[in-house]
Image (tube, rainbow, N blue to C red; front, side):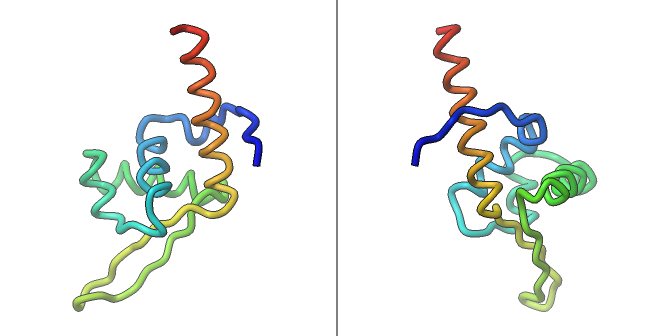
Length: 98
């Protein structure tokens, strides 16, 4: 598959870019683990998740585990494609500057 670079404003915000980067390396990741990894509050994380979910880039699943409600996030197929294209565009832009 050839990746055509494409800048995506939804993904580009630093927090959302980090979330997508983490999710690109796994099938799913827990909300709290990602929140801690990127160093934001629950409310900031929730705002990022809402925007990514509304764009169709992530899926949010809730499940009980160890007696607690847990929230799991994963990239959709579209989210993976858009993230890959966005990274390709950033790489292309970095090559122009570098």
